[in-house]
Image 1 (spheres, rainbow, N blue to C red):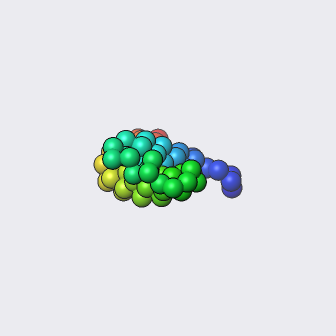
Image 2: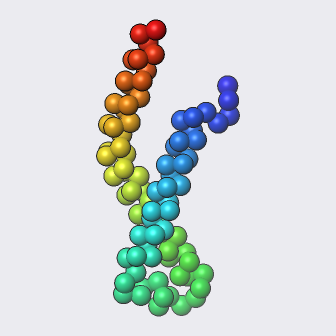
Length: 85
């Protein structure tokens, strides 16, 4: 049994993509400068990490509902095609 099979790699890649989207959205949503008004550099950084994690979970849920049925359709068709042989 391989330590990193394809589904594990895809799962981690999907989570990293959601984190990147969350990090970008956290920066884009800071139009009032809330992150800049924090007292310390580490405080701003921790606040942005927290916002990033919340937004990444939202992206993960949204993209799972959007991409899930499409991937299921593609995977089922490819598996059914291989079963015919």
